[in-house]
Length: 168
Image 1: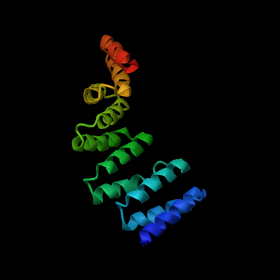
Image 2: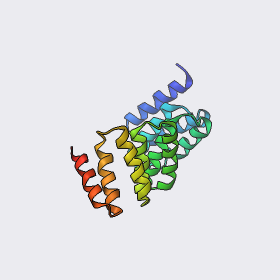
Image 3: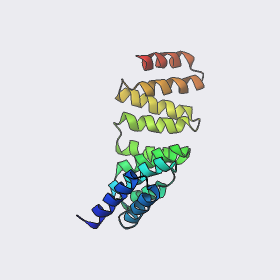
């Protein structure tokens, strides 16, 4: 067992025992030397949720992106964290990176659309939701959000049609 594996096992034990600060400290120790250590990033994120401190892993995901900008999951996770923190502009930038790397992902387009919604950028969100439902016609949440964005633009007939598709 490697030193990192032993540290991860200890962090997981601490987390399961409710010693969240200790577990977070071990994860951060791992990430200082291995910024792209995925298990430590994910565990730190879970701990941050338990502590109701969503900002805790943000800088670690930023360092992971700097160390390996090809890893799409880092952008996606950072976008989710930034959305939780209501930093929708930066979240949109992260989701934009995901869309560029996974242009055929309905979820990526949906997430980007949601970040635009939260900024009141209706035209941009509509385009994202339209692409999401084009890629996955069964994506009910995208139809629902598309309807909401269309309604915000006063496009009521289209909004109603989108709402109907969401209910299907």
